[in-house]
Amino acid sequence: MKVLIIGSGGREHAIAWKISKSDRVKKIYAAPGNPGIGEIGECFEINTNDIKSLFKLAKHLCVDLVVVGPEQPLAEGISDLFRKEGIPIFGPGKIAAQLESSKVFSKSFMAQCNVPTAPFDICSTLKEAISAIEKRNGRCAVKADGLAAGKGVFVCKSLLDAKHAVNSIMIDRKFGNSGNTVVVEDLLQGEEASILAVSDGEYIHLLEPTQDHKAIFDGDAGPNTGGMGAYSPVPLINNAKLAKIKQLIVNPVIQGMQAMGHPFIGLLYAGIMMVNDEPQVLEFNVRFGDPETQPIMLRLETDLVDIIEKAITKKLKDLPSIEWSEKASLCVVLASEGYPGSYKTGEIITGLTSVDTSDDLMVFHAGTKIKNKSIITAGGRVLGVTGRGTTISEARNTVYTAISQISFNGCHYRKDIGWRAIAK
Ligand code: AMP
Ligand code: GLY
Image (cartoon, rainbow, N blue to C red; front, top):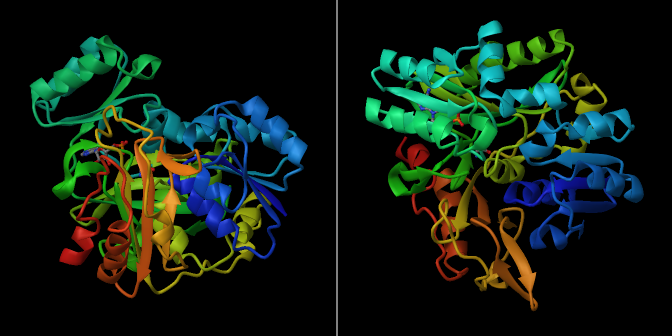
């Protein structure tokens, strides 16, 4: 089998690594990929938003399966095109992808399907937005409707904060047309978890829960990033809670999409917050999480290609269960100095070859490049060091020991990934 992976992050390297372990896979391709993926497959310099060129590549390579990493190509309809042309692809079509690409669609859909989420107002004028934030005394989340690379959400505690958020989205147009409309919702308080589910449009298998660390600094301080680390399992989410999340959140969404005539084939990611022990949806993504996927892949024992293929061929029901390692796993992201703001690239990364990688320790590449035979930094999130151990603490020790061998100028990483689980 030949598999094409679209994307270039740590998530895609983790997916490629897991897929490379399948006996059924002969060749892995990636577009654009990264140097880590390049060690196990062949990479092609095509932008993830250039759907036409990706299509030509998939045809030319005669691939048997395409796995999409990031949201943008899904939001632009890559899956509709590939499916129409008979190329098996894992990811929802454009309409179902609006669960991520439009907060207005997503919140309205949740309301329609009775999925628990914070009460909200949809505001298409500044006047409406101001009235929605005043109604909440400024204690609210203000969200740009469209995609904003994870930066379009402002959590506000005062009227001043909320007005600033609304202004930057609607007046300064910080996210361009993504800010034509905003969602203003009640502020929730609680602990978060990422719940990932694979669906064939009808049947669902949940993956093991993970927890992300969005803030840049230790103690969850500083601005939000794409994610600075993640671990699995999550003590916050026991089996009973997971079953409840499936019943109250995942099932209604998959059923609702099917009823709309747009079955969701792919990976549904529910970002949830446990509020007084009850799950509330903060957001949906329509793709694997990054960095959540890195620890998940270290624990996954079932062949990922089998899972994906069963989802695409609407036979997920035939897969009795997904098997997981009893071990815990944890990923720490190494970022460039300045991220999530502006940062420098081109720093030489040393020590990668001294890390003894195995099924218990992997260094997933994200923002890296090869220059003059050296691996250099080429993005905000550079590497995701991911380890496995009998406990979260053991996995964490493995990861931080490996990190001590790697260095580049301005390397920043959180020293407290997994702190909530360890405190419990
Ligand atoms: P989202 O992209 O919608 O998940 O929002 C990004 C982050 O903002 C979430 O992970 C939460 O930490 C926070 N957030 C979003 N919505 C709310 C809310 N209603 N109340 C409190 N925090 C929120
Ligand atoms: N880690 C958050 C995300 O993938 O959107």
